[in-house]
Image 1: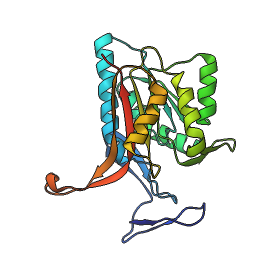
Image 2: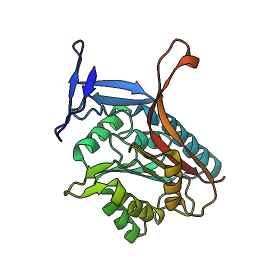
Image 3: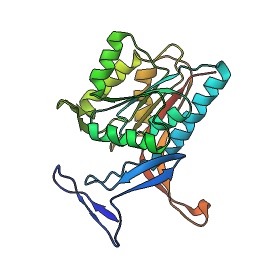
Image 4: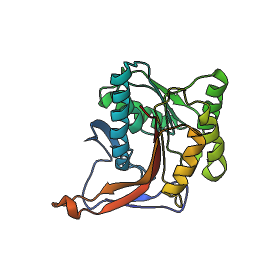
Length: 247
């Protein structure tokens, strides 16, 4: 199918060359997802994040095996349909999943059930990201890991407006106070045009501050399927930066 972006807030439209289901399930990255062909072009599955999901599983499991830590808490802001939340949950973390849209939080819970994770310790919250982070700051709550994938523009459950050019820096500054002394990682990704790996790396430092550790930044991509993988082209699909604490 082909998606054509519309000029209004109602979204665009799909054109199909044969009859297809508008909803179906797929197994991807060791997780089961419900895919929906929405009017906004999103299908609820972000294949470009697969490498990040694998990385988070690996570092969480390594920390738990090395330290016997059993209460590793992950905060996922703008969690959408839950891929990052579910990957961390698979590895044994306690997760707090925050998104402003009830419909996509319900969708994420559906994906958790499909992946056999419905009984894992995951808190599903419909909330404005910045308001939630500031409340957590006042409560003195901290997390061993923070994940952010902010949109260019979004609305909160009570009509709050998020504009990345105005609201990102205050959010990153607030997240800094939620990073625990024994923090493991921060993953920050974005799909906003004009953001580069260097931009992301600089903004990640607002959260991490002067902490020691390893920082990576780069493009997220989706590889083309080819009989010869060496000839596969890469579809650019956003940028990321991530920090990992030293062992």
